Length: 330
Ligand code: SAM
Ligand code: DTB
Ligand code: SF4
Image 1 (cartoon, protein in one colour):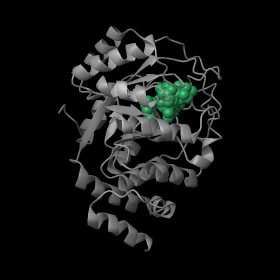
Image 2 (cartoon, helix red, strand yellow):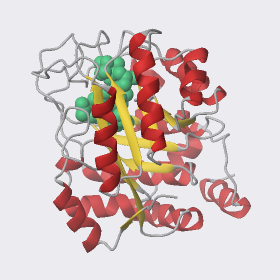
Image 3 (cartoon, helix red, strand yellow):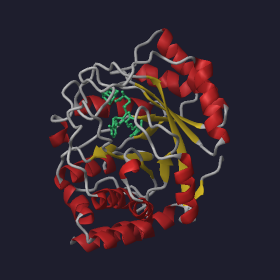
């Protein structure tokens, strides 16, 4: 099959495909940019109501001092970044923050902890409390807590966890240049544990870390051959933080972000593609192109986990000017 036929085959069956080859992914990724955006928008409209964007909010429930050495991360204890360490937040504080987010149009609330892995004990029990509380507010609740075993995934599922975020971050080939303290296989295993427990999977990566087009293709290939696809695919543009090894990485051309989003949308048409970290460095026009390419979710609020995010008023103006509307509660 040539590149056009292999693309048409997907469109005709209108189904989801999990056996993409790396060449299939490359063929989509290397299309002329506007062709990729056009194809992505066409696919998008088959699977999602047009103009609807899910608003999510993050909260760092345990900040900094992480033993992992992720080269992008301001929370790693290996680097001096000025992020203040903060032990686990109180359950009621977290629930109040989530309630406030919900009252401002957010439908998904994600709690992040700067942990290598979840450990059983009082802190995990508090997380389970937080999950129960946030879920009872009618929010989709997501956690990102590092590695997870099967029994922990099961307990999170029982507490009402909707999604577990655990990113592959980059291609298997480039991965070793970014993280040395845990393997790609470790990540795949955690994703599998969440999946087995019946939790939906939120899995994506980061671009702008000095990786090549082929690495971005490799990441998209890994994500799109997971079966089922991750229901949620966050595409993060590196938020460069001084003190991390990637603090002075070359800024990425925003068209590469657009291309990456378009490819993700075409490969995983039914998944929610989230335009995640790094929005502060995008122009309104670049953001508009990301939505055109099939992004249908953003994180709102003044901070992501630790880094600043666009002001809510700016996001509201952008959505209004683009005639985008927030996804409402089910
Ligand atoms: N510690 C847990 C873990 O890594 O599994 C959960 C929290 S961690 C901060 C969640 C994700 O945020 C990472 O996998 C990474 O993809 C993303 N992230 C972290 N720092 C980032 C940065 N500076 N720019 C963009 N994305 C970042
Ligand atoms: C994801 O892929 N992006 C969000 C969420 N998952 C947890 C986090 C981005 C973190 C950006 C860096 C920070 O705020 O510390
Ligand atoms: Fe730790 Fe997660 Fe940051 Fe890696 S990304 S250093 S695991 S908080």
